[in-house]
Image (cartoon, rainbow, N blue to C red; front, side):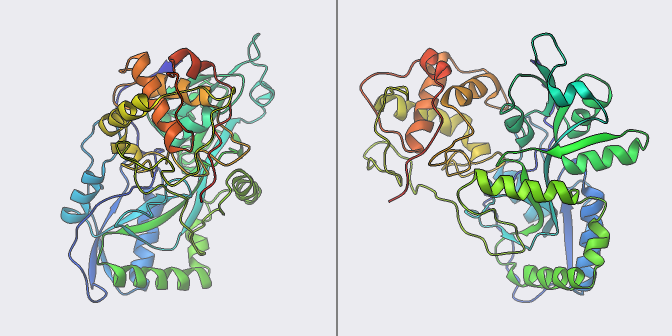
Amino acid sequence: MNIRLTQVALASALVAGAAQVAVHAAAQTPSSVRVCTMPGSPSAELDKSVARAVLSTAGIAATFASRGIDYNGDDDGISARELSKSLQRDCDVIAGFPRSSVADGSDSQLLFSLGYLHSGYVSIALRGDHAANTSVAAPDGKITIAATWSSPSQLIAVEQKNARFDLETTSKLTVDAVAKGRAQRAIVWYPAVVAYRRAHPQQHFDVAVAESPYADWNLVFASGPGTQQLQKGIDGALARLRSDGRLAALTRNWALPATIATVSATSHASLVRSPARYLDGPTQPSPRANVWRVSGMPAAGGFIKVAATTEAPSFDHDQVAHGEHLYADSCAKCHGEKLEGNTAPSLIGPAFAPAANSHLTIGGIYQYMSTNMPADHPGKMSDEEYADLMAFLLYTNGYDTGNAKLTAQAAQSSTTPLNAGPRH
């Protein structure tokens, strides 16, 4: 595996956050707002164009922050604190904020508009590359798939069969890996493909749906608490722009091709039990457990516990308690205090651990986690610590404790699908 560990490119790590923010409440629609875009986003040009049109239609003057979100440049994503600082100091609204059914920010204090671009992650190959499309690029039958490190594209890539991986630090480099022959295929944020083709008009790719619950996203406007009137004005303007065709004209070159968008929506709905929540329609919260504290914690924890079987590896209570501490120290910043998803996807609920027909195995999750996580220092834990962390993930997704400890070998070799228990 070729890992380039410089600075995480947040251009394709577009994930919604459970941000705790505090901004001045606005009793009326403001006359002017400061707008930020996501750092390094390939859709920043579009986001600014849509923001200008929307805010002008709403009768709101807009200024754009020169540096975007206040990102401190570390390697483990954008924290809730960083989002809070930007919304307090640099901007009133974020254009191009991503939401999905696996990380929709519904547990946060952020307010969201209707969606203005339905997009997502796609699989690309050089046009006409037979090897990339038939998985016979090497004698062992494996092809090299590029993905953006510490982003949804990496999670999607590891679901692919018969593959080796080239992990890049930006979505632009992920596309470039295919263009320059470092990889036969890439899983990448579709706006990055659009931006790359604009810079290299001679380059052509075959684009296909990436079938994964992590693939489907919408771009929205996000703002802090107390901005209901601002978001109401934005939603009204979006509705007007949609009805008169101006929104379609603005987003036409950035939207997923119609056939891919249709397949993406269908695949997403079949993989996730809860309905896909496109932001121009009603939303429903994903199942979440309310508390994760192990000491004195009721056994159900929001889920019916799955009885231990010969297929699922056993783990004990002490491992769950230790794994919880490890999670709080090394994982919660990106995945949320309650595993709800922050600047990385949720580790709870039907997209991660459905009741049946899971697309992830326990061994696959452990292998990915122990090799690539935490994002700021992959592989920093011992085998025993990764096993304890895996025990915590199993427990919070519906599996009950047993008498035997979970070993790293047992976790890595498990082929059991991760299927959570149903809620009461």
